[in-house]
Length: 442
Image 1 (cartoon, rainbow, N blue to C red):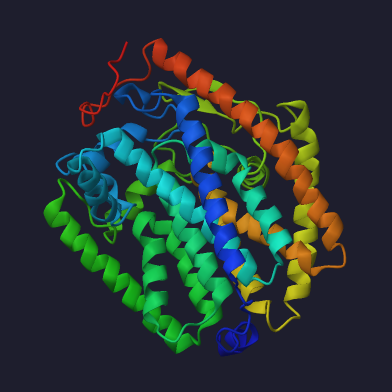
Image 2: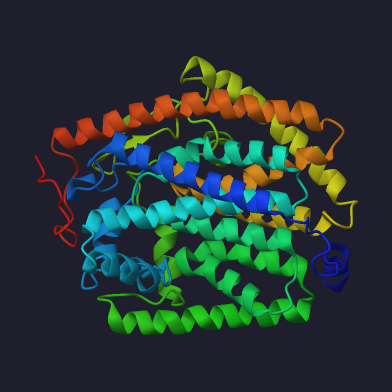
């Protein structure tokens, strides 16, 4: 292990590019664009996912539960078993906004739009710290915002969006390097653990490649202790809030994996299909369909052929695959570069962890796309450090434009399907979450 750490680590701040006021301006622009995309998406979806009859409707997301947990401290917060302190961190924000006179749903949307702004602006700064010039960083930041993962998810109320923001912050820390105070790294590591338990692998990977082993252990232990203490406080203030560190929480979650037969009625895809979704659908989504899964109608794209979609989808998919190839070349070259080596190693560990987990867990895989997205685009951005940087930048522009157009159109199709399902009665209302039926179930 010491040998590996000496291979990837280096003096702090050696990889940082100098930032200027122009970077702050561009950061604000991309944050604003991210918010605008989210607002547009909320308008297209309407109230389809804001009724208690929309459980599992949008790619198996639990929007009714999330809305009720964010707006009511006394609702069932038992899913904190896998979202360690999401209720403690997020619910007071929404309730506070509501207390100021903002409607509850609008307060929930404001939370998601804030996560979108963090992702849009933060990802641009991360690219600049990686060493990309402003033009290249702007193109790849635009690529991030035009992706299927961003358009589909940052316009509805779910925790994967906030989880995605913590991953962007971890990539930002990875690109920045060590700080004078370890506290910042403790907070980043704790943030990745706080919203979705498996995303702690992101914080651990970033810490491992930037700090010596002894410091990595101390930072990680401090982050874990922080979240454990917050979880204990959460359990005393939120109804039915569960401790994420209980072994029972892990065994209960295994029922949703391909390793368990507890939910035989739910589809279980081959790892290859999950990887197709992770690497391709995250960026360019095929046409959505409605399937019946475990008794619920689900808008999904998991098993839809990748060649379906708009005429722009195929061009975008081909360009994206080629761009990823260029990114892999850049990653291979980065391992021989003392400045980029920690970033390449960190991204590799982060992406490997997501690949291993989602080869057997979660259906549809697209539900977790906000977690994959920043890792994939950061990998593609490493293409700038190759001899084919300009062709790669052109490929990124093609994916951004063609993929963006296609993703907008397939998102509109998915939103129309969701609204049709709700108009016909929607899915069964779960007895634990009946109160946030914003629109009466038909």
